[in-house]
Amino acid sequence: MKAHDGMYIGGEWRSAAGRDVIDVVNPVDEQVIGHVPAGTAEDVDAAVRAARAAFPGWAATPPAERGARLAALRDVLVARKDEIAETVTAELGSPPQFSQNVHAAVPIAVAGSYADLVTTYAFEEKHGNSTVYLEPVGVVGAITPWNYPLHQIVAKVAPALAAGCTVVLKPAEDTPLVAQLFAEAVHEAGVPAGVFNLVTGLGPVAGQALAEHPDVDLVSFTGSTAVGRRIGATAGGAVKRVALELGGKSANVILPSADLAKAVNVGVANVMSNSGQTCSAWTRMLVHRDQYEEAVELAATAAAKYGSRIGPVVNAKQQARVLGYIEKGVAEGAGLVAGGPESPGEQGYFVSPTVLADVTPEMTVAQEEIFGPVLCVLRYDDEEDALRIANGTVYGLAGAVWAGDEAEAVAFARRMDTGQVDINGGRFNPLAPFGGYKQSGVGRELGTHGLAEYLQTKSLQF
Ligand code: NAD
Image 1 (tube, rainbow, N blue to C red):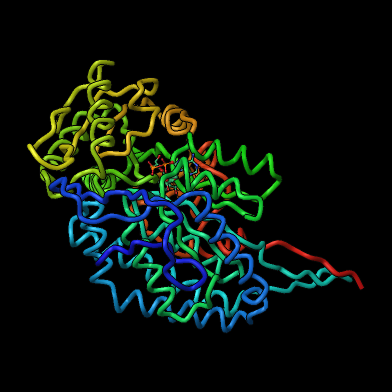
Image 2 (image 1 turned 30 degrees about the vertical axis):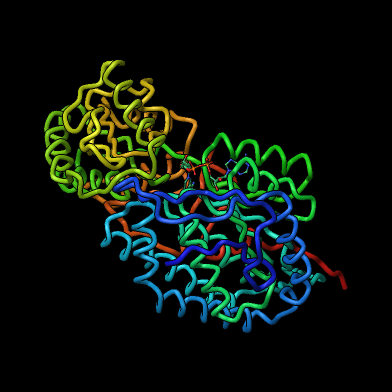
């Protein structure tokens, strides 16, 4: 798609306040594919004003009509799904099939889920002599990362609009083109002017201005823990609502009764998909000591098969960071059984699918989020040891448990300090709440729990 040189504010594309632009780079060949304006505090202020002006009307719009707009938005996304996939492939480097099946398909499913949910959701409750109204929080400032660029936008904007909130979006600087495409889709869907607004720009400039804006009622952020911590502190200082979806270091626990080959192969695929740039990826594989050697062999074979099919990581900085972690793992005593710290090609931000064996729980690679195609395989002695290792990081976003018997896996999962666990390879469900325990975040996205984030209660007593 052709990049817009303005901001989508108040239902139209307006000139940016400043003249600076951001280059959009294709991570496969390092070529600049477009430019978007680098927004300033002035652009953010104009967008927040538009969102504030539109709020009373949208909040008073019946849920069925809000649902109709969301259904129209889903239909536009369906009609433009090839363009969405091509755009994500161009700016993120994601393989075309993955862009179709995940980057385009998941946002369509999530937009559709809110089109349906809003028509049946109980925005009014009775408790004894009280009637409780669930009312929209107000103007939402949404700040999103690049790794699932459209999904993360839709996971915020769709529930916010369903709730009756209005939104200002600041998307990631690496992937602004699909955000512009989304703004076009919102427009085509007939969402009233000012209900959704887009300001492209740098995090410390436009993002920070949005997070600090006094007329934003709720900040919903997805990204790194470092930035999330700052945004949480800013929101706390202003006593405003905040939702944070942050990092992860999730465990894939393979109990001795599991189908080892299946658990390892699905586990490797989970880590390598999207080039390892998935916050909920199971980047630590935990295997019983008696099955350890076999599991490492299976994982190395599975990872080697991926080659460069997984696509690059998003930019040069991320590539250097990931390769640095691989070096650090080896320096701290991990064994390299697939991939390695050398860039596999001359061009593009590629990282070889990598498996580190003999990783111990205190190593840096077992504690910190790498955000690349790197799997750590750890050994445990017994179930208590596995639980201690699984829970032994500051994060708690996701995880997986494999066992011969589902009940055995469920019993283990219930003891994990984490927000989501897939049992024996359970499938992604766009209606299940997504979000973290511990430093993985505050709040939940998707489904009814995701909608509740954008609502506040008012109780009337009779
Ligand atoms: P990041 O925190 O650098 O950037 C995320 C967004 O915040 C971008 O839009 C960026 O422009 C903006 N930003 C940066 N500095 C800011 C500031 N000072 N004030 C306001 N906004 C600012 O993260 P990233 O590198 O884009 O994304 C990778 C990280 O995101 C990983 O750590 C990953 O785990 C995390 N992530 C978490 C989830 C989740 O749901 N938990 C999902 C995706 C990514």
